[in-house]
Image 1 (cartoon, chains in turn red, cyan):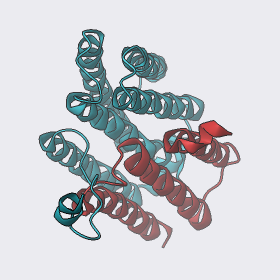
Image 2: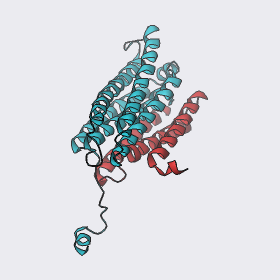
Image 3: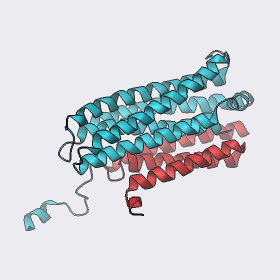
Image 4: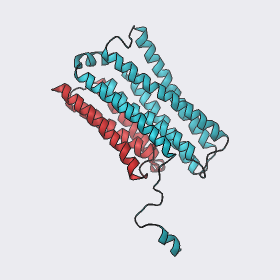
Length: 88
Length: 198
């Protein structure tokens, strides 16, 4: 379990599991509001792990961390808005 | 000792730094904004063609998409390991991990080529319909970024073999690594958006 002390190893494991969940949701044909929100949430968590633990922006100057996390929020919000419009 | 303590501003972490060169981060941000426009265009185009998008999304190979996600995530992870190796001056682990990351990228390209061959073989093209126009252009634009990332990894590998990187000099390696992680980050949004969300 010593290996899990490395944030990169932890991030990699979580990313693999999260990818498996998204794939599974596709296999069972998940659709609609709950499925869309879940998948966006999973993508958001994954993206954040890449930004913080792979790009190593966790300890970076606040501006750069905010810019990349802000991008993630912007993209997720736009996608959510478009899907919300499509469900109306 | 008192002088050292006095020069450190209180509450500021001494290692608060941006990995790599500042220029690469501006480049990454520009690339990410271009993809943000692409992703939003897809989502809003879908809103006015919901049935078409839902129907043709079913023809995509989700297994290939998920496998490619695993390949990019793992490729990114190897590059993190290469950077970590540089920071602890483990000269042999640097090129080894860069090579493994490169091979994951190559695996991605192979899977994607098979996927494209199946689609093009079925007579599908950019002009087939709006969904395929987006599917082909979005994934191909990303495909080109994977190739550029692999070119960067090749340069990093050559430099690493020469022993350029170490705790004293990891700047170039960190810059290339950041670009490679961006390629991964973009696919993490692209895969659920185009292949799964409905």
